[in-house]
Image (cartoon, rainbow, N blue to C red; front, side):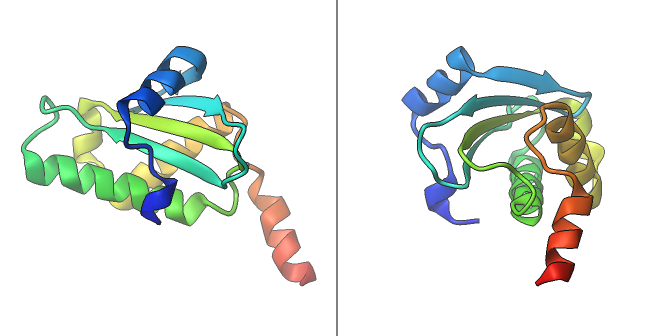
Length: 124
């Protein structure tokens, strides 16, 4: 995932927190805000020191970025996401992280159904 699609500045994080909606499960909390820009989407990551050491935190962030890269075709464009990892996320594999994030995004109704993307691929 390109660095241009990441949220880095504190002001951007705060606008998503203050104006956005949140959805959660046991492993993650996702704040989302409809952005006026027409970029596909942007993500910001927050993994607390309570989660573990630097190696563990970086692994979780890597898994989240990889999951969003794999799901990017299905995610509706124009949203800013801030993902906060919770303690149970440390026990997940990359595949489980993707599944957990996909579950939250479906509940938030920002992910298109997989049938549509498969049918679109067949028609081309």
